[in-house]
Image (cartoon, rainbow, N blue to C red; front, side):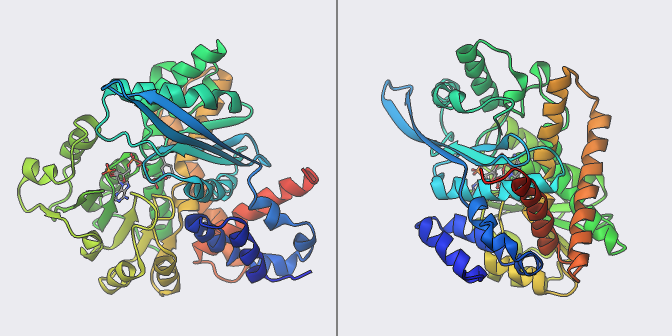
Length: 448
Ligand code: NDP
C-alpha cells in the first residue's frame, strides 16, 4: 500500500474533479496529519482518510418557486451529510448564487473537524442553494424557503440532521423553513433546526455566538502571549451576522474596530465603527456598505478597490465575510504593517498562500476557522440541549458556556500542537485534535 499523503490527496482530487474549494479544504487538513499517520500507520489500512473524505450521503434536488412576476424559477438545492460518527449531521445552509457541490463539500468537510473540536455530540454536514436572496421580496424569500424545505424535510430530523444558518440564511429564513417543516410533518420538533426565534425554541446568544466566539478565541490567543485586546486596532471584513457581532464583542473588550465590508467594497473609519449605524444599515435596512459613509460622515471613507481593506494597518485581523477573501499578497501587507493576531470568523477566508504566510511568520498568531468560529455551532448544540430539555437558559448562562467552550477549544489546540512540538501552531493543533476525536469514534463503530 502506498502510504503517502500526496498519493491520498491525488486520489481524492481525481475522485472529486472540478471542486477546487473542496480540494483546498482537504489539503489544508491532510498536510498537517503527517505526524499522526506516522504514529498510527494502521490508519492507512483502515482507510480512515478515504472514508472521511467521502460524504456518507449527498442530496441534490430541484427547488421550483414562483417569483412576484408570476414566472417559474428553478434553483438547485444541496445537503451533504458528511459524517455522523459523533452525532447527528450538523452544519448550516447557505443561500448564495456561488453555491455548488464543491463549495458545500468544502464547508461540510471543515464542519466535521470543527464540530469534533467543540467536544460536543455533533457530526458534520452542510447544505444550501444557488438562490440569490438579494433584491427578492419577503414573499419571494418565503416561497423559496418553503419549496426548499418541501424536499429537505424528508432527510432531516433532530436525531438525523440538524441544519442552521450561514451566508444568506438568518433568523427570517430559518423561521420560514421551520414553519414548512412543521406543516409537512405535523410535529413541533424544535431540535430539527437551530438559529430559531426566541419565542419558539431559539437560544439566547445564538445570533451573536460566531462573532463573539471568534473574538473570544483571539483574546485567548493574545492571553497566551501575555497580552489582551484593550486598545488594539482591529480590521473586520463582512457586515453580516458574524462580522457585526465580532465588532460588538471586540468593542466591548476595549478594542477599536476600524473596518467592515460587503461584496461591493469596504469602509474604513479611523475613529472606530459606529455599530448602531452599521446594524441599522445592514440588519434592518439591508442597504449597501457605502451608505455607512453617508450616514456617519466624519473621517470615514469608502474603499472600492478589492483587497484595500487589508491595507489598513491593524494589530488584529478578523476576516468574517467569505472564503478566499484574504490572499497571500494581503497577508504580506498585514504582516508588514505589524499584525499580531489573525482569527478566521468566516470559513476558509484565507487562501492557502495567506494561511501559510501567517503560520510561518514569527510573532503572528493564526487561528484557523475550525477553532476560531466554532462558537456558532457550539451554541447551536446548546440550543439543541435546551430544546431536548424544553428549557431556555438566560443570556448570562449561555454566554458563560460559550466562553468556557472557546477557552476549551483554545486549550485543546495548544495542548495538541504542544504534543507535536509546536504549541503556537493552531492549525496543527485544531486539525489533529479534531481529527483524532472523530477517528476514535469511527473506528469504534466499525466499517460503516
Ligand atoms: P451573512 O450572509 O450574514 O453575511 C455575509 C457577509 O459577507 C455579508 O456582508 C456579505 O456581503 C459578505 N460577502 C458574501 N460574499 C462575499 C463576497 N464574495 N465578497 C465579499 N463579501 C462577501 O453570513 P454570515 O455572517 O453568517 O457568514 C459569514 C461567514 O462566516 C461565512 O464564511 C460562513 O460560512 C461563516 N460562518 C457563519 C456562521 C454563522 O453562525 N452564521 C458559523 C460559522 C461560520 P453582501 O451583503 O454584499 O453579500
